[in-house]
Length: 133
Length: 208
Image (cartoon, rainbow over all chains, first blue to last red; front, side):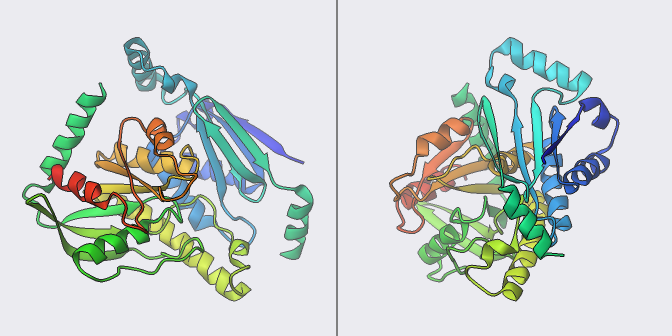
């Protein structure tokens, strides 16, 4: 069974970068798919990959990551100013970030306006998990 | 708008290389994009030797490789830099993916070394003066790893050139990469066959 955990931006807004990443990785390590409102800062995404690599073992093989923000395609002056102001006042709330455990999520495929999540065959996952006990 | 951004980018390069004796030119990208093949091509062209080993198995480069004092020349101009070849950046590494090529012990060792390689590559980002992001032009450019690498370089104000590699392959599309990253200069090359390397060197020197 797949579990999707929605995390509103308000839940991470008050956290520093380290605490944000720790929170997200902890949820993903429970084999849940995170649907985060908004997105991390670019440096935080890099740090998320670093921390993921540090956490890899026989059971946790990493993450699949996807960010979608259709508003980014609107390059009108008004929209750019609006987005900048919103980011200063509210943080990076626009769009969504999906983070899934790599042993559950096979691929997150995206184009600028669409995101698709492909999961792995659950019977293969179970077989593998039992083989690793 | 694009021209203005290009001029800004060019001025970045100008400021970076002028007066810097040992500018670091980093090769970044996902695994199997052809970073080491490009590093070898550059080293063969200007030093007459290889830099690292290549392999169809992902994560062949698992440590940072540095080749110092490479001087490239084009149209009467020259540029000297230290070339830094980095391990491919990935969000997942599963030793089972290596099992069809090696035994379990070697596969686990390779996976462990690969995770450390990714961490090192990200740590080294801050040390780079200019980065060539090497992408496999046959693959979907909208992968989050590509976006994260380029976003991190942008956040650090590090100038970027995108090398759309493997254009010798039928499925390759430079346009797809250009439309994914319209704000960057995209150069279509084949590091393996040396296609468009003159243009590649010219672009590097043009901004020095």
